[in-house]
Length: 145
Image (cartoon, rainbow, N blue to C red; front, side):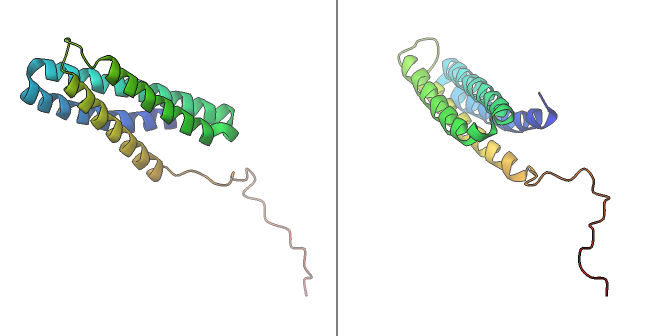
């Protein structure tokens, strides 16, 4: 993975994990141990899904740049639907608190998206490929008088 991709992943996953820790602490206080476990699982699910999605999107951008925007929209839609399916699937679980799980998924998803927006706003992307022969002087085609 190129360093820019790793930097993007790092700058989105770390704030999400930090927000997840806060959610785990709040859920632990409000719902006990099962709430903390639910929040931790929810945060891990979001980081895993969004991280895989970011990897797929970066690979698509390099191999098929003309599909980047379409792939991004389809990928985010699929991720949100899968997260909704996870919340629905674990609605009646006794392994952890489902409300804490759902709250952690919402908090982590919003944090991931906000962090990703921030990373992309701060990233300097070249709009024009720089010319490799930058030291060449342009020829003067006009009259010299």
